[in-house]
Structure formats: structure tokens, C-alpha cells
Amino acid sequence: MFFLGLVLIIFGGFCVLMPDAIYQFSESWKSSSEGEPSAAYLLSCRIGGVIAVIVGIMAFFV
Image 1: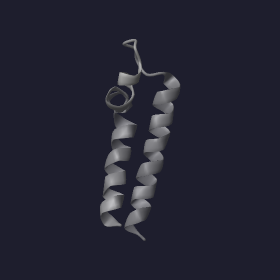
Image 2: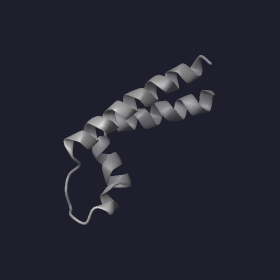
Image 3: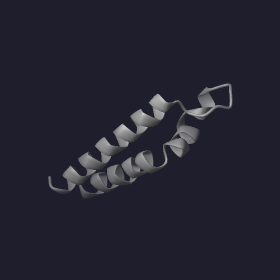
Image 4: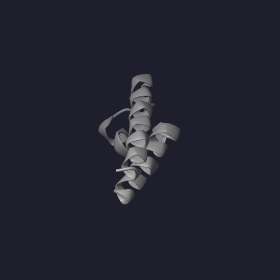
């Protein structure tokens, strides 16, 4: 569980701190226009990142 928790903390940290980079890597190729991610996407990515960090921390204790 230690490795899974570490991966979740790292991935969640990236989602919280750099949602634009996550968008460029995972979603930008799906769009034909060169645009920025929406505010809803940035918010949902950050919320998902916080949840991933919390679950990662909890994985250390299981």
C-alpha cells in the first residue's frame, strides 16, 4: 500500500498544482481548437487532486 499511496500523492499533487499541464497532456489532443481549459475543468482537476492526496495519505495507515 505504501507504493500506491505514494503514487496517489504525487499524481494528486500534480493535479492540484499544475492542472494546465494535466490538460495539455491528457485532453488537448481531443480538441480541434487551441484553447485553454475551462474553469470547470480546472476546478474538477484540483478537487480530484485533493481527493487523491487524501486517499494517498490514508493508504499509508492501512
